[in-house]
Image (cartoon, rainbow, N blue to C red):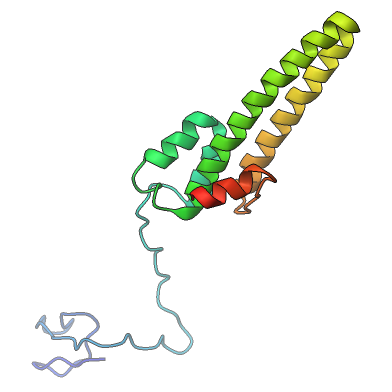
Length: 161
């Protein structure tokens, strides 16, 4: 600890508590914490982005194509490799779901004409439920900080990120 040049008292900070004189504190490493006590906890460093990586990555999946493209365009997020990966995977996943939905719709129409309404409704309901479960799974696991690489579109997203 530095001492005041005017009165000789120990000084904490830049001003002497006893006489009010300014004290030049030498620059250097911070002293170790006192024995039996600790310094106040440091605040976390400010982030450049407005939200954490896991929250931004999870939001990439919320509205599919829209939020995937949005996070690829927004400035602080488009430089983060993890967020870019999830944005591309979200875009590719939604394109794949749209293509599969068209195929299931055609298959349902064929089943409806051949077998009947109930079986075609069951096929489309199972497909929609599977898509919903995958959507929820991707949002939750990404928010938890885990990265799930989907089988076909995951490596494509990794290349793009």
